[in-house]
Image 1 (cartoon, protein in one colour):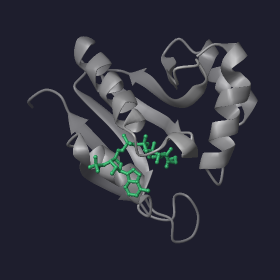
Image 2 (cartoon, protein in one colour):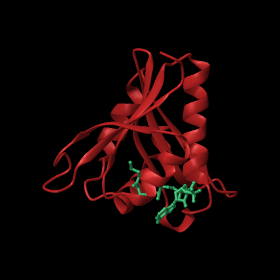
Image 3 (cartoon, rainbow, N blue to C red):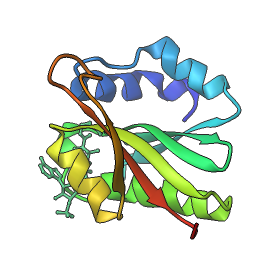
Image 4 (cartoon, rainbow, N blue to C red):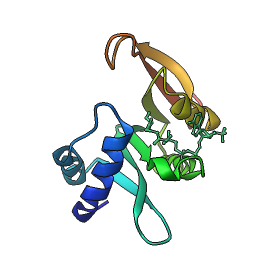
Length: 142
Ligand SMILES: CC(C)(COP(=O)(O)OP(=O)(O)OC[C@H]1O[C@@H](n2cnc3c(N)ncnc32)[C@H](O)[C@@H]1OP(=O)(O)O)[C@@H](O)C(=O)NCCC(=O)NCCS
């Protein structure tokens, strides 16, 4: 992602989350050395999805992933996650971690497909009754 992609990314973000990231927050991520935002585009070059990840110590942490509602269910979410997991393997990371709302069926199905395991939960993390599940995909033994 580059700064010029901001309007398209923010539009998808606003349509995808109750508490969306703001434009300045995305720009801050672009400036952070440990952060990277990977885009998914359609044949015309329009942005239809993205994933933001951090490299933290020897782990890869996925902070945000979203696909334009009109483009969902066609494998882009899985493709973005596959790329992040592949990058984590290339870096020799021990694991990929992320948080997901307990109520987010689409997100949980997506992560389950890659073998993410629940390693903890944060009750009411997203507001009353909206727990976060902490998921981890180990990439190495031990
Ligand atoms: C989660 C999200 C990124 C998935 O993107 P996508 O491009 O639709 O995902 P894919 O087409 O690769 O599908 C991945 C899996 O999710 C499942 N899925 C997709 N939409 C679903 C839905 N509405 N309900 C249940 N499962 C769903 C698919 O069936 C697939 O699993 P399967 O292959 O085992 O059947 C997308 O739904 C989204 O942007 N949601 C809003 C933002 C969000 O919740 N992000 C995750 C925050 S942790």
